Length: 157
Image (cartoon, rainbow, N blue to C red):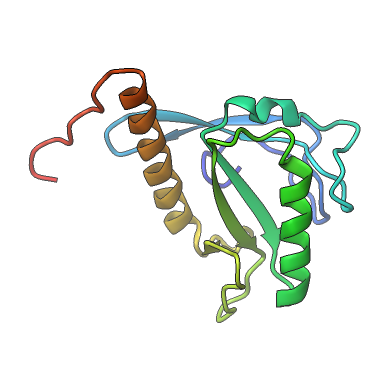
């Protein structure tokens, strides 16, 4: 998993995740968040036999990674993934759409929040920052809803 350094099986074909891979994502203040790479959907958008989509039930953020090919293919694949995970993802979870396998100079397709080249690493630092920001916001909202105050930012930030 490029964001955490967790050992995830990666192969040069789609749907290569066979077992859940969990990894810690630490922000600059030492706050830890757990990310999970889950086996999920088949190419047609239905849950695979080895899917672990039930683990989405407590997710604060669902990162949807769709390879960028042409804009129409991207749009169709994105909608397929959204339909496939809808029964499992909580309505309160935020969604971050990442266009993967982006070559240098590639335009971000409509519907994508970020563009990354997971093999070359381009866009990964920006993705990491974006994920941390979203998870912090979700954590703070949860704390407020539970009657607590979110942590204060250290002075000088």
